[in-house]
Length: 139
Image (cartoon, rainbow, N blue to C red; front, side):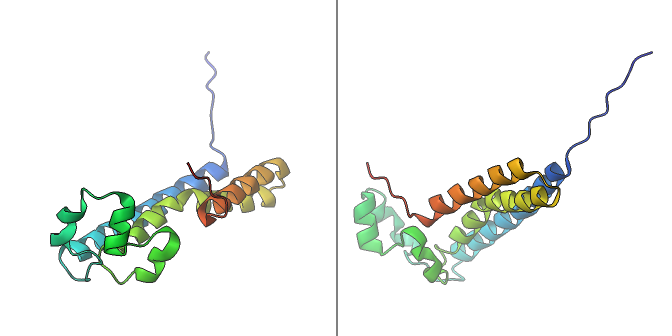
């Protein structure tokens, strides 16, 4: 008689998967809707679509100077522009890992897994430091 091995996923794996599923779908929806608003001209773009080809050959510095395109987190003040609003979808997609680790941190704390909670807290710390742009490394 053969013994069968039953494997069950940890509850945290289910939490992680649900968060990834929902936030990824939300991010893609916002990204697509933002793109549609841009393409169909519902929102005025910062850089008009017909002018884009004249900027393609420019360096990044020149492009930023000529278009006034936002850098860093400055795009958040320009969400009324059709070519900036898709950044919101990208940001939602980029936040998936942070939200997952935040949920894991609370789950680990609830069940008393201190080492795992510490690891999750460190991950959150480094994600926040990276996103805040407090540490800058130039080339």
